[in-house]
Image 1 (tube, rainbow, N blue to C red):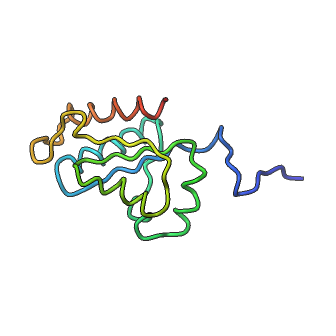
Image 2: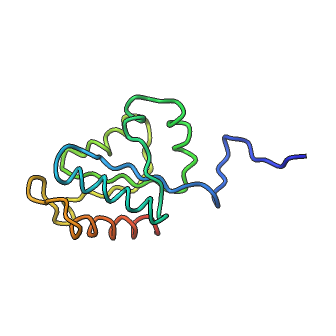
Image 3: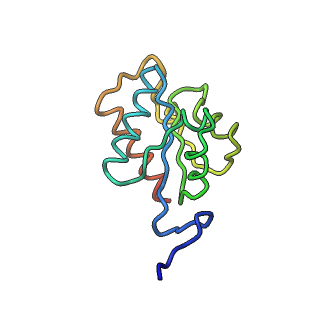
Length: 128
């Protein structure tokens, strides 16, 4: 007999920490995207598809409430990633606005150092 948990219940010890970067067209959008990819590669969380949330893709939407933690990373003041999750009905998540780290749209090339600033803060937020 196989032991399993119904799909609508969180298995908190195995549930992922989901990361939704804005991945916008600006320099800070690229920083948010590259930070999320690095965090995923380092095992800090799992980058997840923001476009799927906006497009209301059911396979994506059903997995979000099962996450142990959700981190949204926005590059600029428009906060597109945050608004996408809110519009889809998700209200509980951590939010990192790169401007709060001194990374300004149009003035922050996606250098290793800028990406590292975002990765460091995001990793800290994922741990708490």
